[in-house]
Image 1: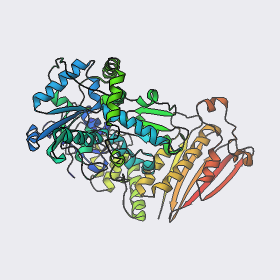
Image 2: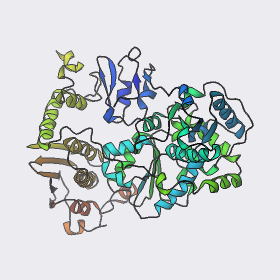
Image 3: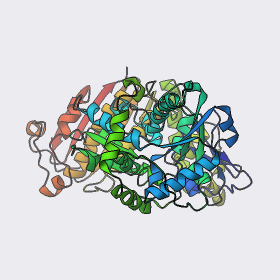
Image 4: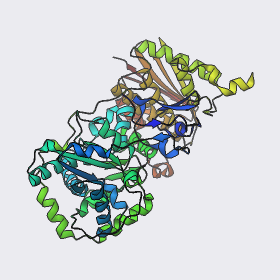
Length: 406
Length: 138
């Protein structure tokens, strides 16, 4: 698997900032350049955010791909509502997309509004504590660090995948073309969704043909434009953390954002300390999807804009919209196609005895290291360096502090 | 094959309480025990760790793997458990009001440890308590 995040070697100076920001020890500095350990990456985007040299390079697909299909449809992420305060401003965004050559624009509010109903229904099944994550990074974190919590994960597919299935159906009927004649593009607000589409998390094939990055498409100022747009109000709030709290009859909800905080809350679930909680809503980015690393507006300003926008939507028409599409997808189309499997990228060996021998060696090497976690060796901590030495990717001579003492 | 880890646990250190168990979780995953077994061990070690933080003058948490056995021992320096039978009763707690307000001291620590381990031994005197748990690695 080739990692989709490229590193500009001419820009990277090996400064260790990304490595220290990585929540899963997935980065090492080798020969003065950052390297990613793919199997440990959860695509949270903290490396990109923390790089002050713009060395991390993520490229969206090419607009040339739009010619591959008869009809080109683009789906906007739910966090698009963090950029607009009125229908006219949203119209301006639509206009930009038409100018790019898309035949039709949809947003995800309809899907998230329907998804909310589905989730509420699903939660009534039993009294288990469920984890809701529309965030691929959180799902990856669970696969890596909390595999025993996978049964607690709500098995709903990502909103953009459900959206693509839904839109394909709507459009093939509308244009009277085969479903495969429709090309669906998604505008991603974050690395997490981008890679989930590229790597087909939880499925054998993504329903999305092309992915573009939000900050690539809307660099210029957006002019207001009157357009006939239908938005499902109940779905819009999904763009920010804490929607479930205030929008359902459920009062046993914990909403958590920011990957380190998510990790702490998951640990409490793991220790059976939150058994009286019904739902954990978790987002890797601070603020929820409006905090995605490809968004253009400040997270907190976005939250305010969403409220402004929602105040201007008529409840009646948005309820009608939701009602119209409620039964369009089959039940199974709402769920992940494949069960999510535990990942064990930290395992030292497949053989228990070998692992223990290695672990003892790590502990021995660690005793020789200064244990100040300065990261100058290019590993995220002294312990990580000891692991790298035992795994024969580094030597103890990589420790600058030991060299200094000599 | 065997391996040992040892952690110092301080009385009243709520800031870092639970961090030893987090590390244990990480190390056991690296060693490659089954997620199910790791969860039992970590739940137990968390309870043991919290007991030392809340009730004792401080102590140590040790975890050892030997062949196909894994044992967790918590040793503290006092003041001891007055009535072990009571302490093993679900919901019985001697934790102060202040501790309960922080969300700890629900009286489930020792019962949870017993429930999640294959063998469970406990000794206590005013000089300190020793709780020893073990599991078979299948």
